[in-house]
Image 1 (cartoon, rainbow, N blue to C red):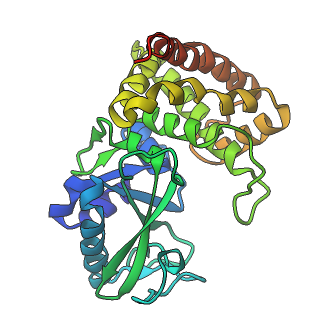
Image 2: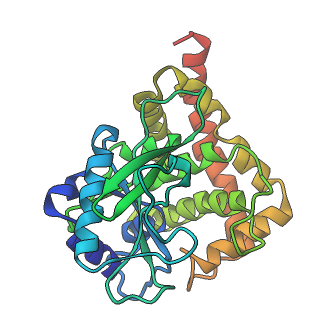
Length: 305
């Protein structure tokens, strides 16, 4: 994966241990790194800095290093640094284009691992990053804490989030089908992200079939372990609500069709997965992952643990 190599090589060596790649590039690397025929289409490369306590310092160092190496701020409305007097919500995110790249090329976006989970606060949180170029913000989302659970190593010295952890984060982030659209499209954000869950399940199933493995069968147990590690007393309630959004998607033919259409433009490009296979993946995912996760959580909930 050329992008993954370029990102890893651009990062300061001392920062790489704090980086976890999440999102489409992480999934693409996990499933297709050894397949030279596969090309992953991505516009943004999401770099999560972990742990939370180190994220701001490392993000500032990385931003200064990349700007010094001729990376450029992504142009647009938020393409200029802010100042000390700007509120955090008025600051641009750190989004950087590689050297000599066109404005529509892929870009690097910096994210922060979230603080300890507090269900009474908004999921999205902003933190100020002071650099030599000015002030920026990096954001965190509560459920990105799951990406920190046993991330997978790569030969590039950066880690990638586990597919089942990215799937669980998307499930929890979308408990229902919302009307919020992806900018510049008529695609619902929830359909894209919940569809991504089924894409990850489909790719895992295909790998299991090819390798004679049973990775999908281990997802629920790992999800439950991660919820307990990252969310403590909230683990049971989160596990029991995780399936609501995906059930809503599978019950809505229009939303399901849109999710499949988006998937075939992304990670499933060149595979052209049909409706029958997508629906079968959904049914299997509910039975083997969602239902199993709920079964794991119910005994703990019943005993008040």
